[in-house]
Image (cartoon, rainbow, N blue to C red; front, side):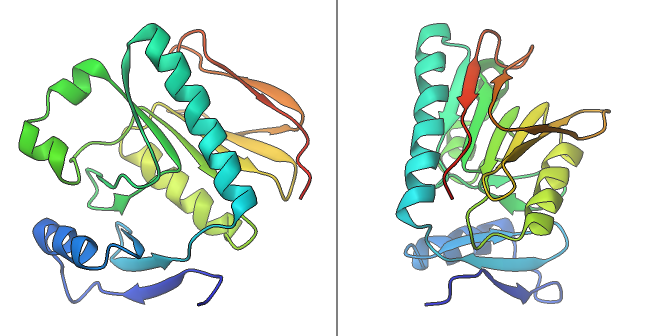
Length: 193
């Protein structure tokens, strides 16, 4: 198995949302995404270090959300159909209750047509920084309010906000949920790569 994503150009194939959903269901052992520009990305599983970090970040957001009850938290297994047509699965995602509840049960059960309000993308050793930055921009173009691209390899985090330049902060640092996740704080140490 390759350690880097496989990218296929399917622009001229034109998979419908339903066909992409069935493709993912039929190939459940593969983590698939589709970009807004028509590329099918087949991602390898992450190693234990990245998997542990991802799980910890998801737990931190979930614990905050249990206390505040302001929205829904989603794992990296969840695919969102973005307004621009991309089908993406962030490592951690959060959607405010009122936006989530505006979807029908059928929409919630498949790959919901909604962009999360907040995402975390964690760069693993095999991830291309440029591809992750493009993915973050795709979220931002689709309505993302706050996003963190955590990059252990460069010991930094990139913060994405609507109508603002990307802010880069060196580790260690504390990240704040701002007005999107009020009161949420994520402590980020210097990572041992």
